[in-house]
Image (cartoon, rainbow, N blue to C red; front, side):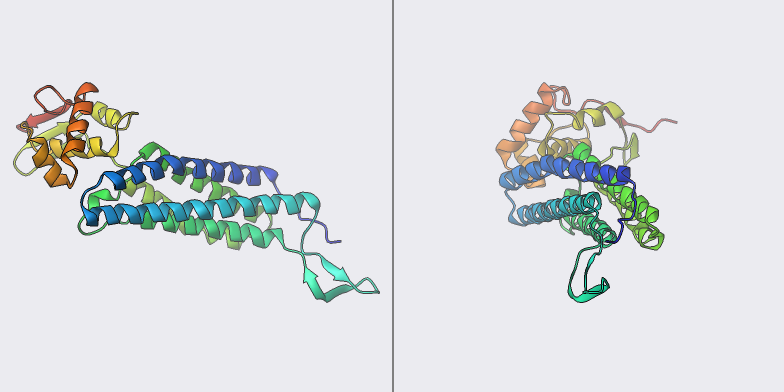
Length: 281
């Protein structure tokens, strides 16, 4: 029997825990997108959100496959199964029969699955020409956890490949870590502290950003808030906002009421924590 290659269980454990965390945190984002699809009136916008949902579902399916493959690697290693061949009457390797799998190959295959997961998430948040603003995470904290967990999993698998003298295979996945960084910076929404519009100066307090990422604030509320920030000190009627954002008027009215009750909007409809006026000298 061929002896199993000694491996660092910590790397496999870290990768497995990271994949489970990534899988669990796809739930809030999928839930938010499904809700958004139901509430969106514009067909083309609805189609964009539906495409995002499909990509997230596909990413979750591949995540499950990656977790199961990693468990298979760990199990084969624990049981001492590694590329065994049947023997002939003289004890030599007998090739006509099947050969058991090689954990090293399955380790590489797991990393390939993570690469595909990253690609699917990139497709989910690929901006469209008509609705580029939709290409952001609805649940930034959860999506941020997904991306950081995928980074941990891929880094751990690369470390394990290096430990098994597969450094060349490990280096193949360095570009995927860069893609993860780029994806995170693109889809996690940020609010600049200071922004200058052509005709008027606006400053946005970081506290407002914290409120918009807190529990109870949904994607519709955030979208309405950002739109209001761009409008100045006067708030248009809900029907005007709904028409501009392709939302149902009733949903906009509910969002405005919630934002007011949570202290994001003043009674006059202006956004708390936003300064409009001349730029400071």
